[in-house]
Image: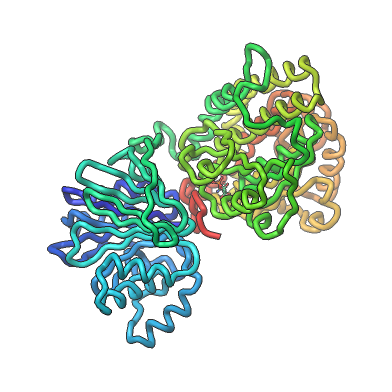
Length: 607
Ligand code: M6R
C-alpha cells in the first residue's frame, strides 16, 4: 500500500512533500522518507514510524532541494525500520514505490551476480539498481528508467529521480493508482489527487501500464506498448485542506458522531422524501431487467454488502451473491449478461475489489460501484457510480462509510423492489419514510455513549470476545468483531447465533463476554434461545436490543444496551452505532492508537 509523491517546484520541496505525505498517511505509516537534489546530488531523510518522526528529522537536518520524491510505507518486504524506508538509492538513482515487485528475488540474484549490493530487505531496491545499471551502460536517465521498468513484474506505482537532473521525474503505473498534477512552472506526481490538492486541482490520471516523464513545464506519457499517448486533464474535487478532528479526541470518534448528518445526506441523494419514492437518481439500467446481483468488497464494506443481500433478496426477490473480493477475483464465477456486478469500497482503490471489478468487465457484465472517494480508480472504471456522501473518512476503522454504504444499499434495494414489482407504491412510500427516520434514531443512539463507555471498561480487561446475531445482525456481528480487533487488538469473532452450537459454544466460560445483537425482529425468540445457551454455560452476556426486545426478555445479562424501536429496514444502520462505540471506547481504555492501529492502513492497494 504506501503513498508516493514527487514534486518539481520552484521552491524547496521538502515541506511540500511532507504536506502531501500527510494526506497519504492513510495508505501506510510504518516509516516515511523524502529525497531531494542538493547541489545536483541525491540526499535523503528517513524515519521509522509515523510522519511526525520524519518531520522532526527534517527539522534537525533540513533539505533545500527544489525537486524531490517522498514515501509513506506499509511494509510488505522487510521490517518497518529506517533502512527499509524509501527512497532507495543506487548510485545516481532514487526511487519510491507502492506495490510489490513479484520477480524481485530473481532480479536481486541477477544484480548481485553483477556486483550490486543491497542495503535493504525490500523488493523496491532492485528498481534503483536496475535503472542505475542501464545508466551505466550509456543510456539517458529516461531511457534507462523505461527499459528497467520493462523488467518488472507485479504491481507498482513508481517515482524516480536522478543525480544532476534537477528538472526530471519519471513515474510509472502498473496496478496502483498514480496521478500527475499540473502547476504553474511546477509539476507533481502522487498516489492520488488528494495528496496534490494543496498544489493544484488540474490532474491527469495515468492509466494502467503508463509511464510518465515529468519536467516543470511538460508531461510526456507512454502507454504499456511504448506509444506516446495523450491523457485528458481533469479538475479534481479533492479538498485542499486537511480535515481536522475538531473537538474530538480521535477521528474515529468524530466520524461516529457525524453519522446522523452524513446518513441524511446520503439518503437524500437517492430518495425523494417528498414524493416517497426511491428513484431520485437517473440510472442506466432497471432492476426489472436484472436476474442476479454479484456484490464484492473487502472488510467492513464486505459486511455492508452481506447485510444488503438480505434486503435485495427479501424486498426485491433478487438473488445476490456476496463475496470477499480477494476470493471472488480468482473463483471464476459464471456471470450472465443480465447480472449486475456491484463493488463496495470506501477508498475506491482496494486492490482486490478493483481486480474483481476488472474481472467482471472482462466478462461483459455491467459494473456499478458504491464508493466514498469520487475520483477513485474503482469509480472511474465503473459504468455507474453510487456515491456515499460520508465525506473524508480518516480513522482506519471504517464507521460512517459503513452506515452510508448501508444507506445507499437500502435505498437501491427499495428501488429494486419497486422496479421489479415486488412492492406497491404505498409500500415503497412507507419504506422511504422509514429510511428517512434513520438520522434521527442515530442521533438518539449517540446519547447512550456514557453507558457504552462504562461497559467497554470491562471489555478492555479481556482477551477474547464473541459477537452473535441472526439475519442482518449476523454480518453486523462480524463487523463488530472486526472493529474491536482492529483497534483494540482483542481477539473477537462474529458468528451466526444459530451456528453457536456447532462449535464455538465450546469457547464459552465465565471469562468470555458474548455480545448479542438482537433487536425485536421476526427471529428475536430464536436469538434469545441461543443467548440462553450461552447463559447456561456461564457466559457473560452484553445484549444490544431495542425497547420491545428489552421488555420481552428477563434474562440476567452483564449489561443491556437499549436502542429505540426502529423499523426493520434501518435496524442494521442504527445497531451499528453501539457496536462501533463499544470498540472505540474499549480501544481508548486499552490505550491503543485508535486512528492508526498497528499493522494496518486505510487503503489496501496490494493483494
Ligand atoms: O476502502 P475499502 O472500503 O475498499 O476498504 C476495505 C477494507 O480494507 C476496510 O473496510 C477495512 O476492513 C477497515 N479498516 C475496517 O474498519
